[in-house]
Amino acid sequence: MPLPPDDINADILPRDFELLIKDYLVDLGKELKTFEAIHDLHLKRTDGEYQIDVYAEFELLGASFKVLVECKRHKNKIKREVVQLLYDKLRATGAQKGMIFSTSGFQEGAKLYASEHGIALVHVIEGRYTYSTKSKDSPNFAPPSWANAPKYVGAYEDGASICYLQKGYLEPLSEFLFGANC
Image (cartoon, rainbow, N blue to C red; front, side):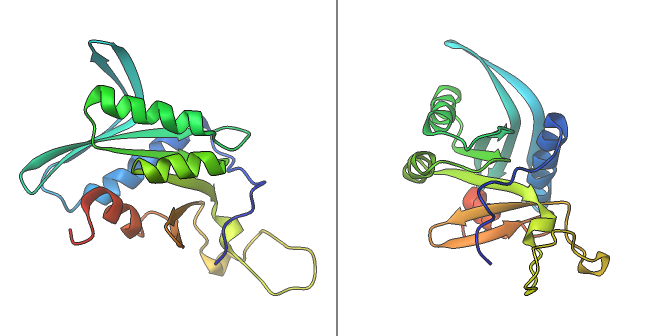
């Protein structure tokens, strides 16, 4: 399945968007002995206070890991500077992993910077855009009810592959967070 069109943005309220992503993380961590996800956390550090849309902490193989997640609901694609700010937050807070979920996609510079610094980028779209038909007529983005299209999905690029994520199918993000064999 190809990448979603660049000109579509998911229609979701900011708080609902952040809670959807928190639910994704909770679903990812349900098999771990220790996992916690927190919405709208404020972390105080010596150099200032950082607001985190979704914060997760878990233990794996005896080590503690912290994850910072930014949820961006912008009209335009996310720029490199946004990814750089998350990378700075990672260093300032001692977090090991960072993720950005966006309703508007990402510019190429943002994708390159994220790839070089181990930050996951996920473009969240309405699930109806993943339904395809071979009709010669103009596309109808209202899949039939029997198609069971999810309300929202996340397009996650990992190297040369593109995965569509939804609750219950988040394995590619599991690999990013916990490693390939966890």
